[in-house]
Amino acid sequence: MDDEILAGRKIAAIQRIREEFGGSLHDALDTLVQRYDQLRRLRPDQFAQDADTYWEGFYS
Image (cartoon, rainbow, N blue to C red; front, side, top):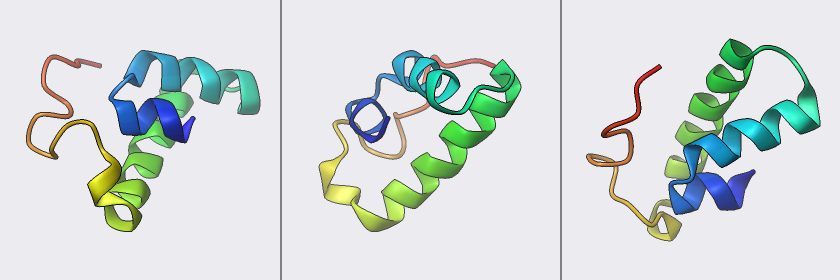
């Protein structure tokens, strides 16, 4: 899941989260946002996109 988040592949990350943890789409999206925030703090230089553009075009 982290690799998908770091690469900006949000849909793939949501799919992976649901495979690993189950739950609803809403739960997976919440998990994605929480993990994104953690990774952004811990490994900011490893993101393929900067923080300003990461969520552009992604509507939930």
